[in-house]
Length: 256
Image (cartoon, rainbow, N blue to C red; front, side, top):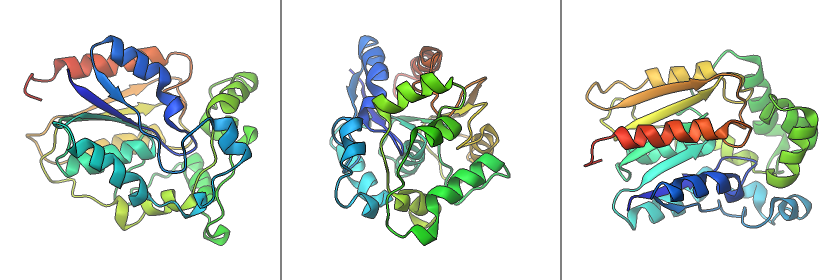
């Protein structure tokens, strides 16, 4: 039985992967869904009582326990969303996984895109004048940037069930030295998934990230889903994305 580690992104926790965990378990995988530090529990409780020290959380604080978990098994598959998608790429670059799937991933090496939504949301979250104060996600911001393809009512339901607050330092680190990697190195098979209507990680940035991989002998694939937001893993139609990922994994060589 192959192992999968699911890695959530900012403003979410492990609960965001519940349906994916159920789906991939039914397909015969052993699924692990670790929470980031200070993200354990029900999102509602985490919003009402933000954990002490949340604003001090850094990217390496998240990567270390996930990498430690991966090293305890025989090269698992990694599936990550947003910052989780960047973590997938960083850990593939370190050779600790047999394959990776990066969904709407934050791009490595401070890669940028000339997209208004990308710049607006990145600037709001990483705002240096806010210091270590957490970014408090509210329903309006969640609908406007995270779940913009949903109706306001649908988005508010998703917010209540799944949204968390988060540390600005995580995104700052993604854009700094902790988010750097060598894209010329050979790597395990990598699938990159983009969402056409993503206001946080635009589809054009995911394509740019995909095209930055240079090793011709390594397998790197790209898939874009139309009419999807950054909430691609949870919004209606998430099953189509999960099926594509599972089918791609099934097509990989048995030795992977």
